[in-house]
Length: 509
Image 1 (cartoon, one colour):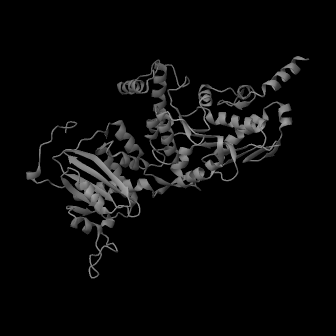
Image 2 (image 1 turned 135 degrees about the vertical axis):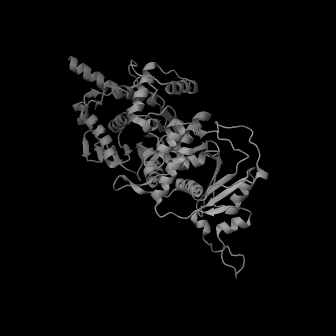
Image 3 (image 1 turned 90 degrees about the vertical axis):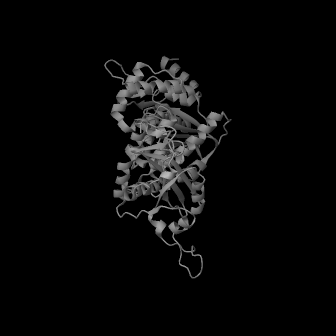
């Protein structure tokens, strides 16, 4: 037997081993455009060795997971008959690029193998082989049964088009039978939406060390510090004291060691990525979801609050009145912000939210707090008369302000509607850098401010010049009412007889 015949015979024998196939059979283009044999890198091998049936992957950039999944899909289709695999991406062109990776790898397998499993359909959105196996690409999927589903950038899909994210959940995810594979991989895009919710659920299961069923996601996180690739020579790179503190805290919190080479890489990469660093190269899942969000109106302002230590523990001063800013969530989400003006500081000390409860329910909740009440800023519709609120058939309907006043709420101010929403948003942008926000008591409100964003135009693939009307807008609108109320009507004055001395000073008032 000739050497070439012996080599071919050995290859045919090894084709039954998927581990061998994945690292020896396929070729790809590397990031320099050079054709190279595909061999799983450090991150790809970590994902592969820890894979589950359903996998949700929160990651930084350049891990090569899309390439690994593309090769896995091709391998499944070549060596198994009648397999159906799907790729869902944020846009169809993005999905076609992943299909192109599969096509390129197929074109570069040995000729004898292509003869055994030839392509019968080679279209822009579909590849189909003679053995009945197929891979589709699209922006959603419904119908049929898939053996592998790759969902790419679900975080961005959730942020830009919540309805499409829901369609993926109710449609595509229901095409996967128990025991088949899903790879749902994305960078973070804010602390809300389908991807965020699924990550949270998967993290809770991971922390509890619960036994996963075939219908549970396994959570995988890949941060910038993991692996050996994010490193550069530290010579001449300055690490500030703030950066040193940040790295030291990471080492302590995560139980890791960060070399000088990794610290230097992070500093230079952050200089390049600026406010997008937490999203593109997070250190932890919490940091990833805390990052600025595309299309978010207040992204820079909220990032600055975190960077300047203005989101954390913010005490209530019992000597100072508490003001409130409201958004009436009729058939929606009721939101109330609690504010104190302590000397020159604007302290946001609380956020209350809920649905389907009467305004008097929330006023009772406020009355249970041990606060001196200042002014209550109500939105424009607080001055509208509501059908069904009249006390008698002869009496006119009452406004929400009247109802609250009769229940004991005083010092109410109606904040009139502003014609130009952008002008009101600019007022909030100017105001936010002055505030301190209590992270625990205002956690839901902080999410609202972070996720208040523009509407996404699917056709034009750009952000529209108007806000999206969703859950986050209610929290934002209540904050806008507070800001504009403070600017229009000022703070309430506490009678001297009710003033008490604060127990401690806070942050050098």
